[in-house]
Length: 262
Image (cartoon, rainbow, N blue to C red; front, side):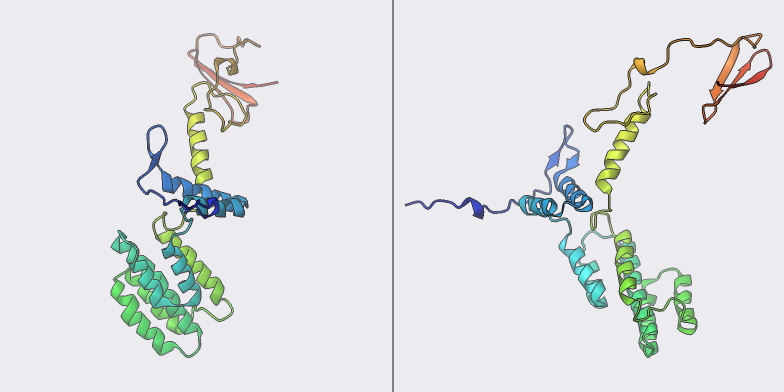
């Protein structure tokens, strides 16, 4: 006898990383869903965002980001490096830059602890120096051992570690942590592009997201309101000022006139 299925126990669908959307199939399905989830969180719709994560099977943050978040805030520097190394297809320069940020934070925290000078020297020699980065960075850290410039104290340790996480997100690829407001930026860029390519754009009205932006000829002034006769020959050029209060005209009669609009 077949058992009845329970709708509440429907398994969460698995995301297909190769699935594409759009008329030209240019939009990656998983990336698009992640952008929507990120936008929902930023708009304050946390339950809707969480439901979308659960229903789509697509998380906003990958496990690598969650691991890095935990390790950075906990000061588990070796685990931070292991997390960075676990990210596939990462350029060696990016790995080195991320490793430098991590070990620099560790170095400065040791200096700020009051009794970690020897350990800080060990980090500088064994962890930071082999990264083969700009020598000026090494010299700056070496000077910090004397001047104590930029050292991390107990009072600002958490704030500095949060700053480190944000710096790592900037260094790592954008898929690692979606930039805040990315969906809004894409939509705004599309609207701006439509306005710029509109041949007859001449209206201050806001563009609607429900349709493509396109001005008609009706928006172009076509009624003569005044005729200017002061030039004695053909007019070659006219230009309004940015404020719209003045009009400049030049003519083949070798004169230029600035008109004040009333």
